[in-house]
Length: 191
Length: 188
Length: 257
Image (cartoon, rainbow over all chains, first blue to last red; front, side, top):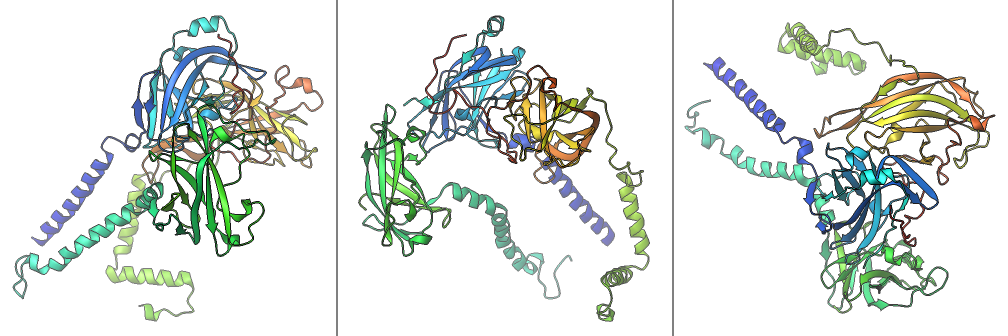
């Protein structure tokens, strides 16, 4: 009797442990739980995150960029997006901008030249929006289906808002056929 | 052990104090588990420290008083040319009087400006990056000439959209108190 | 039992006697059962298998792609140069050693910690373990970030002390990372596993006398601005070249494509 009860207790402990493990292992997994809060919105409209709002004002493609005197080419195509960024109730910085292609690959802004607008270098005060362009290089085949990602977080985007805006791009082949360097608009006050 | 013990008590009676003790133990366990997150959360949402009726405040070992909060236009660029803010931007100036028993050891502060809607602004506005501005940090060494008594002023500049009114400043002293700020208005 | 232990007994002696005493107190024969049990359990996880030989990272030839997890690196050659303005040496006697490689980001996302990819081995007097800088051949600029599925030819630079002998060969170690769950947070992420995925031993080409012999015509890497010596790598180091996209700069009139 006593042995049977001990065995029963042991089995109960094992069952509780197994149940706990099963709960811990069950989906959604940890990465999914901690994913950013995606705020989706249309191109041309304000998409509002926790501490910022972003509007993709315009998008175009280019085979080459003209940054100062330098001409920058790419093996793919440059996607140049004009953004209007605003802070909500307190000063904010945008520290992350990227595009995601149809296969889920994520291309961040290039660091071949300074892009302070989206690398945390530009402080945005409430009520004083900032406008400027960012440049991202992507493989030409990916350019047709891109979603812009913008966040105020730098590398740790867990459980904070991330704006997602689909980009309407259609001029890739024409641009590649006729490469002309394009300049990238510097950030400026849009108040 | 099953059934009543030698005193005739059943399982519940025998274990009553253990069961009661489980409640505070559970509370303590939960608090211990969330303590660090709670502290982190509090830091992100500092609370307001009390200020006196005349608008001044005793905080972080110094006495603070807002003596001026108004739009300003007489700013200079680094080359001494007049500074003109971008269109649609109004520069606000806040002057805070600091009274410290020992100005040498006065703590550094961070100053935010609050508008009528409760929005906050900091002193790092890019719109003012070309203006020559004093460091607004509540330290005496930014005052020129150096203060003779324990009373000195710290001056902060902010960029607001034209038409928005500022109502208060918030000062926090991260080196002294991470979870509270003091809010100063022109009159109490 | 404890009282019987003399204070002058050595520490190992004490613990051994304590352990044996405790064990024998519980069950005299349990010791052997426990040892057998530990062996049996560890054997279940491969405890009795032959241990792999220590640090025998495979050697591959130049031009062979090495998979490092989030990146694939194909070492091309190693060169030795003197002054490479505007890269600045700590001392004019010092030399630059640079590894030219084709790098492909195989991770899903743009990669910024690119200095973690390679190490230099078998060369005396190298001042830093990590490369000092990475230069993109495409426009001869110092960059940190490469993008998925967009292979680029890059050069990794190390500064070598002028007092050290001129190397004739060097081994480029391609490091790796593993995508796995963190033991504490159970979050899946790329983890440094300290493993060398492959070593590439190549002769060092001395191009100090012939500046024209740098990898491609006019390809002397020339980052836009003077890099700060000994700068520690950060997740996103500030890009070195800023021109029209500088804040406050007069917005440029763009030419439409």
